[in-house]
Image (cartoon, rainbow over all chains, first blue to last red; front, side, top):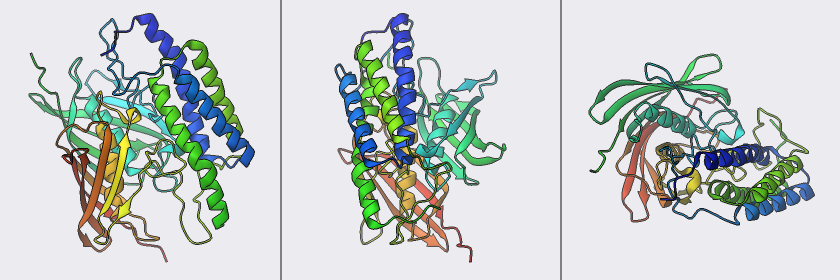
Length: 203
Length: 203
């Protein structure tokens, strides 16, 4: 595990890498949709390699160390669903209400496509897994997915979506959660239920 | 739908955008792991924006047209699981044996992380959804996921993985498929079963 980051170091990383990663999400999108001329594509490829070289002057090793802050937070910058520094992540921003219900609003473009114009069924499963599991997380006690059952009610079009999840019941370390994806019209397109487990902390 | 592409146009796009997208996957990875100095990060950000500008000189519109070839292939370049031009995709390369079993070998790095050092449970679901559904696809008749049930047997470490799927039985337009993810030691980490449906072609 690497040294815990001080608040000003966290802020510096968020200020630098947050906007860079957002720019990278746009680049991923246009790399799919580009119909540019050969010299422009070749030049873009060169710039991508130069950017990689600059960022690689100092790299965290693999396997990736867990990064924490001096205030005890675990940083999830690389997480594929919510990671501020991961261009694969939409990223999700989770909101939790007083009842424990977790909601995220997001807009998905072509990088998340399966059938033409629609969100890939597996991406729907990824979104639901993350949001359902968030109902089971406790500070310092992350929850792992035990089972996830997903039912596709209607195709999910690319665009604005809402993902919501709630706890059905709890049994010891197990949380039984349910949730769904709704489209811009509020219609449910995908439903899910799952069991999420908080492993016992070794003493 | 856009004009079908001639074989030489398909080849040109694959030659230009395949390597560019591969370079972009590396950039996504180092953007997560970089600990470079501020001026290098700032310069990398500028290069990313310049690359975006070059690729954006001519863009396919959204919603994205389905691209086909003059030989009747549907191009899945943007697909989030297998897309040659989608840096979010690992991408999966599916192999089908004589019995209809579908297999893909892949290596997942930090961009697919959930728990530290491990593949996000939702990414496991995405991989299984795609590979199971591939058992149900017929030429010109894509299959859509009806239900997907995923069971997490053990944590899946980042690194080398194999995903396999097979058909359990078929009932008309429905394919009942099953499959699993195995790690580098051949141990099963995640199991799945699902129902995939080929919609009736409108006549």
